[in-house]
Image (cartoon, rainbow, N blue to C red; front, side, top):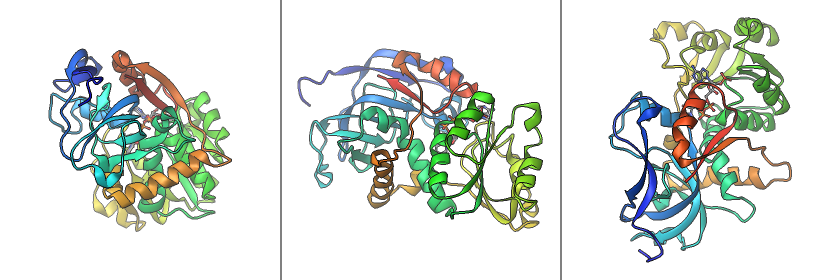
Length: 335
Ligand SMILES: NC(=O)c1ccc[n+]([C@@H]2O[C@H](COP(=O)([O-])OP(=O)(O)OC[C@H]3O[C@@H](n4cnc5c(N)ncnc54)[C@H](OP(=O)(O)O)[C@@H]3O)[C@@H](O)[C@H]2O)c1
């Protein structure tokens, strides 16, 4: 490794599962030696995603101690052995997906690193990489949305939600969105959603009835549900006969136990995607990243919303803000 690269770094380590207090900020964490196929990236920004809270709390299992964080954007500062096929050079500006993003340096597999086009800043890439790719994969592979179809999107003001709503609008979908609170509702309306329901307000408690009424009693063609526990039953009621529920997250807790008979009544399809499952091959990653970069460099660019850029040592606060539903758009760390 080059002599300009330090041997230690600032990073956030989780030694045991728990609340935000288990996110320990350290200033002397060793920078890992590069293994075959890896590159060393100095992170300009690292993303905070809801999934990080699942790994922190133990809802999703992972080995501890662990540095959380599944994406970042920055500059390549060293190449490991056998990265030649990807044609990277020191100095390349990149986004990456992988593990251990809550740190100044990360060592992603080169196969999961993409060079940024000149018109895309590292902050912009950080603001939309994981959520944007999630949105692009689930509108194409989990359910292929067609123009004119009714779509219900929950938590539409969140990190994934603001991008998913804009992408669905571009596909010509008719969007019914839910969001908690008047500010979030106004934001989602500004993105072009046709109907936005504040499902936390007294008037929004009957959001299922509102969805039925808006769709003339039929229900929606597809529900994108990442809230799960609190919305699941309503999503099942809101979807039309032969419709699809794309369950892609658990912000309020896991989906309650489901008897298969429940989905038989309306011949409903349930899809449970993960982004990493959809971009496993290099070809898949390149396909969806090219789409994302097109959206970021188009004349009518995708609008990016960064809730806040937190100093790395404030990551605990970022987790508190995210899980207490205070945020809109994306949370970033400045390592
Ligand atoms: N399957 C995949 O590969 C994949 C990839 C990326 C993200 N996801 C999932 O997509 C969802 C969104 O992720 P994100 O990082 O963009 O987060 P986010 O949407 O910015 O934050 C979660 C949002 O969920 C809503 N929510 C409803 N009930 C909640 C509760 N009890 N506690 C906390 N939030 C609640 C809140 O919006 P309101 O205030 O408007 O209700 C909150 O802002 C998560 O479920 C995540 O796991 C899945």
